[in-house]
Image 1 (spheres, rainbow, N blue to C red):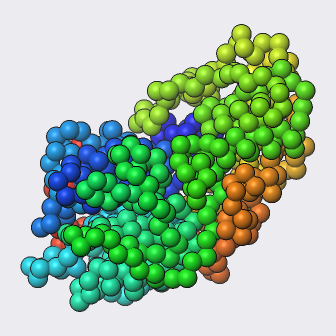
Image 2: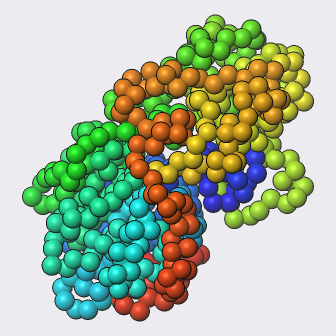
Length: 519
């Protein structure tokens, strides 16, 4: 599978993945601990949020270095590399791109120096980002006006924020952040650092999750509580919308840079977050089981077995089976070793399509009426292939149940859905979708039913991909999208293949064995 999310229930064409979250972020301040290894394990727990690239920045109090490369966390880092990354502060990033192409230059953390390469005792800033900004073109113009040419060919919104933070060497990083953060529009959960301090910030709408944890001798911030668990940190609380925290030898301090207006992503509960994560006090697995129970009430059917599309459909299938009284069983086996690969399938293998990832348990499905539970339908390719596969394996009826409402609108806040024209539910009604995927019946959970399962008020959630109501205003000129900065750079003639200014240097060639960045 080429670069993508790796949760395979949506991938029939390896070049056209299903919904992808932008990234997972992790940060730790812990003197005396092996912070690079802790960050590695934190990123390992967040690998589902991004599989294109991984990187770790560390500081020992005298300097910040970044090591990053394309690939999975386990492909990018090994024992010798981690052992060389010594310090007491670290941040890490697992990337899936929603702004900027899938290349080494756009891997994170980004790294900038306020000294612009001169020996003036400047500060070095490393930053990692989960989310997506919607005023990226405006930020690019601001950076261009500063005469900043040190972006290492980077065309993502994270590099722009890092450049803006580094543009004020007369201010502390904390003071610069309090000036820059209010000018950002869109979704962001940042972890960033300088030589002495770990920072974390979340946009005023809190679209993407970010949590704070406590170690015996330090602090941790992460995209999900599951990453706190893996490093033995206790959950303290969520970073609040519009909050900037700073952690150093003096402890933790918190500052507000904006008025909170919570709009947490509803799709986190459906698909993006790990089931063992907790969001606003609600366990994600429990929420998904509740969604399945609601599905059973809203769309009952006579059947012999309820089966999930593994793995993301499993909790909702358990809920559907419990509520309906229809036995739960497994009808598909997922190949646990299919993940990100640089080897493209041959035409013969490509024609097998989804069988690379899922294969039917023929004895379990033969002669049965099946309820097949999945998390969402995007283009419909995977569901179509699964229905066909189950019929070929002997199923007499296939009833598809989806644990989210129809996805009709693209996301501009950190999920890389298909374009609106490619979304199956945008062009077809329920009966049209049913015919398209070949199911005997089709049912989606209602939006109110989904919201109820989260135990959150509707006005504290973003449901734009389902209802088109975007809580953060989008640019009127439609200058937005994954490759917006490539277009801005071409139009301005600003694209550069070198880094003249000396803010960072690359100590190894990009690709292959990774690259170490130093100020």
